[in-house]
Length: 480
Image (spheres, rainbow, N blue to C red):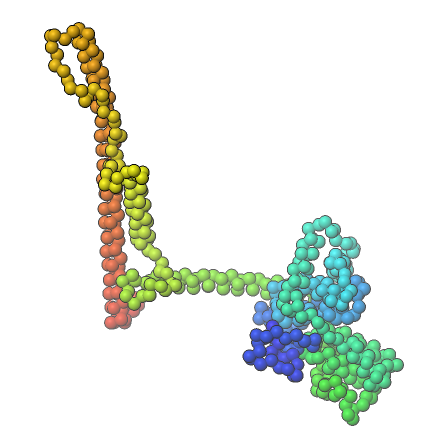
């Protein structure tokens, strides 16, 4: 992160405000100021400095113990502890469990230092350490059980989170080689095994503190040699000072050695007490989070109400294309629904009223929507009626009687079809009349609602004007 890098990588290339957008790749350790190291997210979530320090010490001890059980080199354990400290500079102990992050750190560090271990072995080692602390009979986890599957998923998620927060910058420098090189070549003290071992121990113990977040590895190596030489009462060259060759001053050596010695004065942390502290901080954090969510919802509702109250459709200065849409009143919702119903009714009537025309239809000729079907003319209707005469033969009379019977039956059929067509016409007229009535009622409702809205707006304006004229009266009335 650019904000973290700007607090100080090295004095050689400090970042300027205009360089926050660029990516910086370096093999040096990322360093931070003392204020940045003390003001962590865990402190903001309600954990004090002593409790945070003790939790980090427990996490580093778990990493060291699991590294010994997994038979990892000291370099891998040192990498895991430094990554653990870097992660909790950015994230809080309240949100992220330190045991899961310790497992993820040792699992990732083993891969970085080319000594990979299976995740099953890492989980078993931490489970074994926990059983020994609780004075239980050690037994491995069941690989098919839910507890193992849950822990495995938690470790994988923690590893991904660790890589994401560090930006995949997991390169770490150590002072292990520097101590041996300085004592053998510069100071010619390689045969003094007690001095070398003491300096090595100081350096490994300093991994549990925040020294590696604030100082370069060369300066830490010089401080460890300087402190071990003072304890063993071995004189080292001071004119010129030997530590100045590695860009380290006497003040830095004294400050680093003071922090290392203060680490030995800290009492052994109580894991159960620290768990209670973290759980209490978690509860407070969840309450705060829920309260913030509620306050945000309330603010949104207040803003919506204000926008709805300030909205007026008669305002000429209002921009129609503004993104803030007013809250519709129930009257306006009814208007919208009625207008949609009217539009649907008119469209349906238009669809039903139109007749499908073929290409050969003339455009002028129109048909009513409920017109009766065109019937064929009877062949007997066109013929003229012949007058009955006495001179006609009986056969002709019979034919005429037969024809008359046919005419009567056809006329009865025609009358029934015409009556059906008339009933259909009447039904169509009734439907049209009902639709017209509905449209008229909808228009009346719209007019009434508009009048009511106008009256409400007028009353509001009058109230506001009265308050602006004499705001003291309403206040006095309320007090009484």
